Length: 359
Image (cartoon, rainbow, N blue to C red):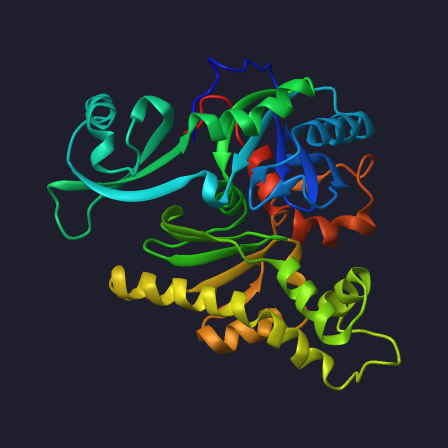
């Protein structure tokens, strides 16, 4: 969303780079006669404390891990598309009178303070996307505004620059999911779906109508909160709790019969926030029919979560497939790892699909 090419200039092929609290994910997508192909996908774990709730707390450590990620990947390109999430970015839907994009840009520049919670707009990067006509007033159009403080963006981008990377496009996690969805799924007019990306510490919710975002929300709960709750309940290590969370398995000291419900109990705060977000959307946007909920992110694999959410929301819920219509290079990517990539790679693949000049 943010046009920062005047700050960082990259070349040719862009690489999707998803910077999460627990890991870095790199997705290089190339064009072919059969459509886009995932040429490379690499993931590198990040120690705790480097990224906290979307904020860079240890820039030097992040730079070192980025260098190692690209070194191991064999990826020659250094032009990247990356994204913000959580408290670092504000996304707001606003209705404006019908006008052309240049006129709207001037209006937002002059009056952005009316719509965004910043005292000094000179300290803010912002961008917008026109969604289309307002459903209730044909004389108005709906617009998504996206903004972040320049200091927050610079704190995020400086470690990438130090790693020798050139950021051509700075996106938002929720919109990267939209890009990924559009590339893989067919949709009917006025069809509404929800994509929920459950990361380690942040969950992104993106509600899409006609293939375009109409509602987004981030909240600072993710898979780590489930793991930590299981750690406390069973007094076990983080790794043991991770195994229980994702596979519903444990050693002989735990009661196997109670494990599935224990995992869901620990995941209940996340489910509750998802439920509240969808209820808020329904009450605010007229209660339109939601066809599907798609789950993405490493913590979407929490044991029993898909079925639990489907029942709670009364909406068909399934894991998203970011490679539904995208091939992969079997020379560079082990076919045995594709299922894991589908789960954790949705944002990175969405970023990797972006091109310079996209909106």
